[in-house]
Image (cartoon, rainbow, N blue to C red; front, side, top):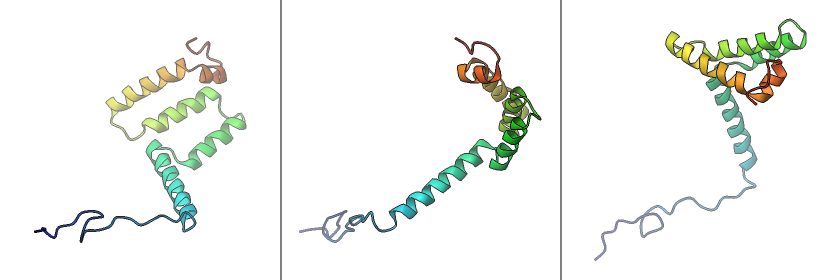
Length: 114
């Protein structure tokens, strides 16, 4: 006697997804997924793309120094957090920035931890 309960691919149960045709909408799903991931990353960073573009324009025009640009990025990154978390995150970011050889070279702040 059988129970009549089937599983995936079993008797009477759902058969699972069918074969995928890459020609049907695969590019659309990939593009939509990519746009969603980009928007999520920008939102997660707490920094809007326009703010980054403005910061870059100010830096390129010489209105701010690289150090001021980095300080603004850090400020924008910690904005909205409780004060204790802001201080902790700011300290960690400043330590990472100070010890990064690439950023140290760009900022002209020393050997970058080498």
